[in-house]
Length: 154
Length: 154
View (cartoon, each protein chain N blue to C red):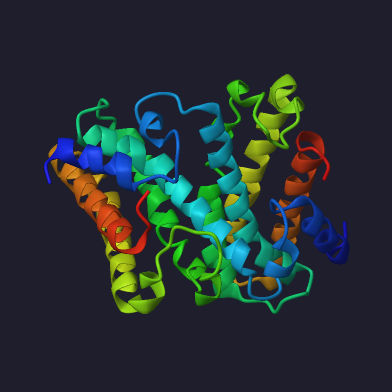
């Protein structure tokens, strides 16, 4: 498969719908940005959920799962922010106008999430279960703070 | 915030909808599994798209973007597979029955994707642009092969 052919194939086989082919060449369309950032949130839920359950004693502690999920979350936590482009303001989304009106605070909270998760990656290698659970709790607080300030109530 | 309170809050603030609260405690519901695996595909599109464009000369080569995206893809490529649970067969999804009827081949293709992306992580550190582009092409072929065999045509 030559490279031109590859690109044509990519446009067909990859992605999950409208907007993909343009997003590789230029600024992604607003609906694509929203879909992508919501995808990150879905996966943060997938990998943080079990940790929250462990921290609260609802699920048995599993150090290997914590380490794996912390690594995934360390990557995921760096993925959503470029999706909060002002051009998405008119899309159907739970993001509040505060994201764009108080961007400094939003960005600070985003950095805090990245830092707390990065700390979990380190702590999860220590074998100190109490410290790991405390760090999971610290992450949960940042999730909650950000959703409280920047996401519409359900 | 104590840990019990944290858990209650998590169930409220996290996730993007139905099924989250149960997914941390037990097998996620079929619709949640589909949503999660589709989220991975969306993000693989986000981070592979620009690499495909570079490999085909449609976008200028950017070694830093390749390295960053390769790292993200290395994580993402390990996330979707547990979502292809046979209990999702009746959900609205483009996944073909072949995923479950020819699981060995599906799993082999999945492993091939992980391995090719892992190789890109290594190659992207080499500074060898031609080798990087060849490896991007190799990944695109696995994407295409898997979609061809296991995803409904659009």
